[in-house]
Image (cartoon, rainbow, N blue to C red):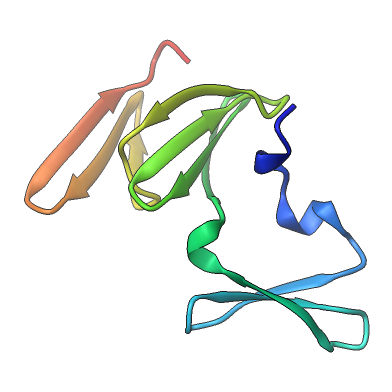
Length: 104
């Protein structure tokens, strides 16, 4: 199991995590003091669930992991991708990307 894909909020349930407009994640203690700042660009964003798979995005890369946090696929789509049926759609610049994920 790769700790890279552990949920931030589950990694320490005694902390609060707040994202800011300036692209930071603030880690707060129980009295809301800032203990740590993380660049939002350095973490994966969980944006989609399908069956027992989670879709995590960083930049324009999506990593698909199973329920044990094992990577099953890595594809070039953003967290703005939309699943319609079994087709994952993403728009990048002037291109429409369509990936059939029915075999997951």
